[in-house]
Amino acid sequence: MVEIVSYKYFRILSKIIIMTIQLLSCDAPRPDRRAIAKMLEEYASVDGSLATELTDILLDGSPIDIEVDGKSTSSAFRAIRKLSIDYEIVE
Image 1 (cartoon, rainbow, N blue to C red):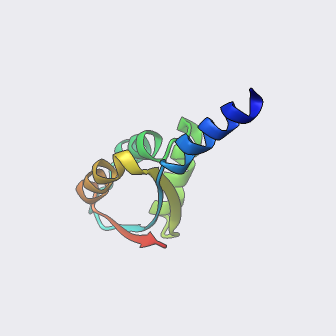
Image 2 (tube, rainbow, N blue to C red):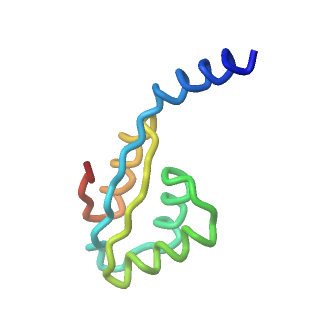
């Protein structure tokens, strides 16, 4: 029974696609820290304090890597572009 459950679990995991996106910089004249942190919480699946810390790192000029699951990739790209964040897809 355990083997069947683990096999089914593996099949579910094998269909999940995770994309790594490197956020390079934010070109907005007045970047919205709260909106960036909220975007990171929603699409990168991080908690609020980590999202705020990552936002500070990004706005200080250092790139950050985030992982986005396949079903919300297009929404994540839309949110990133709306916030004027330069990004690169990491393969």
